[in-house]
Image (tube, rainbow, N blue to C red; front, side, top):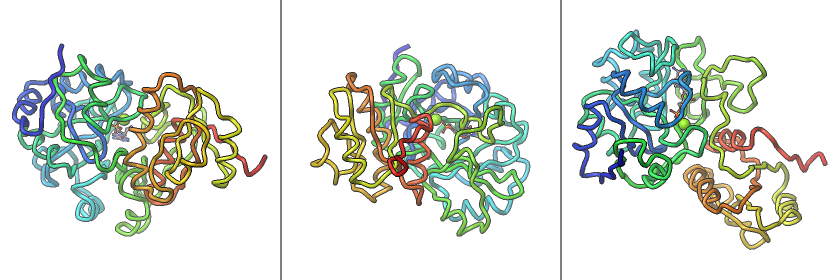
Length: 342
Ligand code: AMP
Ligand code: MG
């Protein structure tokens, strides 16, 4: 199967493929999604096949309006917390988990009694959901385990020949996946950090917990609240090592380990000080820009096939920094070199 590349004026073609049970890569403001009709289990199964995604990892259902949740009877009851959050952050990079109805095929919910729902802000994503006239199930459009795609070219690199089409809507503005919050527990709990910060969520809801798996390796035998959390994820082929320490200590450490197969994932301010290959996430404290560039940087490192080791600073856990931290700590398999204790 040849994958068609569509431009943003060809939404009707993408919608026709989706209505027909096909799979299309679509732009969203977070990352590119691999979309299929969320109410068609057979179509959704093709997403898992194309990605090589474990079947026990549920998908996010994308709608084009808050009212779509009721219109398609996706959930048993809409909690007040969902209304408040939608008012504050939808459309946008926030996914809410609620108790599902039987309208949701088991392929989407992966056997759970809940469903994750998001209303993206990207105009092309909204237009294609509306034109398909059905909610779209869409995980990130990468091969399972590799860095998420933030451009149509990234999608093609992973999915050419595996999906029907990709719709090009430019580079994703947020660059990391949506924040996932469950409203199916007594206290709302963040299962994955993303574009909407924990601080922002607390301003609207008051008490919000953060699942342990956001920051730490899941204990042996523990059940993940969000099944995606248990998989090694976001990793480039090179080995990522995270360094904890001052800016000077990071630079000294990397320079002491400089070699042809080493690359530093760094900030603009480091570029003149590092004596090795570099890929910059942006200016030092600009976490929004780091998030936007993260996956493209990891993919660029992979394109240079000689690189075996990537040194990065341990990111801040403040604001959107937490989303970058969460992705990089997984890419690094939770290994951190702590220069403060050696
Ligand atoms: P992706 O689709 O690649 O952005 O990943 C979606 C994330 O949301 C994964 O970590 C899933 O495990 C998680 N997720 C989706 N639906 C649910 C659900 N019903 N309950 C808990 N986590 C979910
Ligand atoms: Mg993903």
